[in-house]
Image: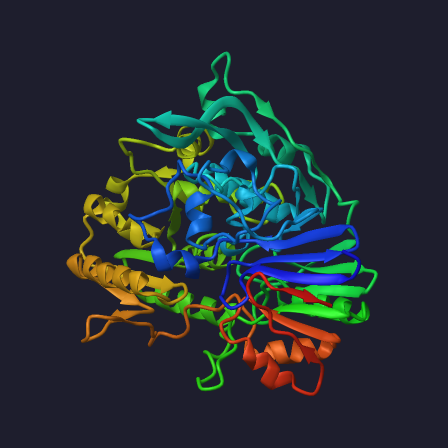
Length: 530
């Protein structure tokens, strides 16, 4: 590869599933390698999932992973799978913009030899998320055990072997790993709790500062997750900008504006930009930008009026900025925020990078509901690390006015143990985007109705479908820039070539920037010579 080329392996015409291959001379980088929920939801749902014993087979056959050679782990190659796509010769690294699943969720399928470069915060989030999730093929961005082929009743399956746990190389682009983070990086909850002689060997990868093979810079941007960054990549053809996901209306909007300034100064040749919130020509513009400050005002107002009954706040996973808003609201209303063990584990990891991020203690507790089967990370949280910061269902039931519960729909079963008599449910996340999510909200409405709990932020309409509106004031701020902000950002950075990704409305970019600059619309697995 002598010139500069971009191939959208996925995410060209969908929101999420970003998998961009940038190549020049003898270099290649992947700009994110995320799970495409749009494609996956065409075929799969909670009870119909890709089979864990077939490795890459189900994913490639159903189109949820691109058919390419040279990228994937050989131990996940099922004997029935034949890859027929183009051969990728060399990948220096995955440049990971942030820790959301639609950008990071398929990294575990990649060869171990392909390192990941990210901010320290993103690395901590990805590690904690893997520790607290099910061990599935491909959903292992940091470490994994190799699979081996076994035959069962004449059928070949890929099963976990008995070898060591292999770690992928990670390069931190903003700061060197601290001793504390390095220890957490090698920490596997199941191994730490087992403490048996002969426990599975850990085979470490490199965990270090900087990436020497590619001249790139990671610049912080504001998004609905900590640690998000954009990239400036220096190539012989000129600088390439990759925005990742970003916004200009969050509490840290100054970081995005600083990125815009730095990106403009690089005199970029190509800008690869997200377009989540832009609209098709025949649609009304998407919702105007709500700021996190406005969400905070609404949350404080609702919490000031809930009285002494049960209060529940539902906000997106990994949205620590929103968690901090509700932690403050709980304090103002003389309550303690009760979070799940999974949230506590994530906060613990993030606190190592930024000590301003709260962890369980006086004002924040871990909701402890014993189960027949407990994940090792959860056991570590409730029985080892935060044993003095637990609250049980009976305590919440006796004094509901003392707590604000951080629950989602999937935690509603805990209401049976709490036995509330009324209360308030504050929905502070994005609305339903597909039929399955709509069904979940209908069920959520029934749970709340069953216990006499008033909902804020959504209601079930007369047609038995959720309506996302709030008479109290705005309760959700998008993690993505508005169309106006994207227009301002592109014109400020002023690239020669503009390539939209992470959008369902790529032609909006052609219409908006026609005559100003070259706009190239990517197609899945088509290489664009730049």
